[in-house]
Amino acid sequence: MDRRGVPTRVVAAAFALSAFSVAVLSGIWASNPTGYVLKVALASSFLCYFAGLIIGSIGERAALGHIRDFEKNNPVPDVEAEIAAALQSEGEDGFEIVGSVGDVGIPAHETKEAA
Image (cartoon, rainbow, N blue to C red; front, side, top):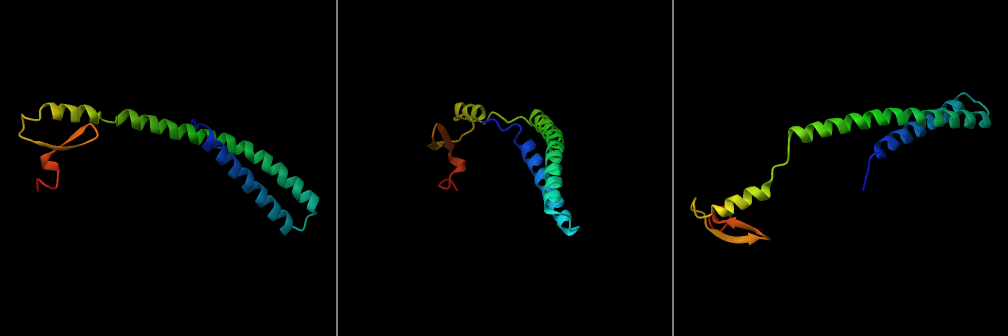
């Protein structure tokens, strides 16, 4: 499932709803007519939605850039290859295989029985 754009739309919706609620509360507090308050609230909601899209898009791109840099600088090690290499050299270091989890053997020094 592709989630690109979701944070941008969430930020835009938050901006729009915040603008609407601020406009309604300000209009009511100023004793303006209901129709006028709703018109101003809808207009501010509409404008702030697009401002939120722009700000959310900038924030999402910045976050994705940092994530890509982090993944590039901190690659995930190939654990399966390390385990396979350790199992190949099982007799060389004196460890005895006492069980397995799936396709991975458990050396005796890692089990409770060996302690």
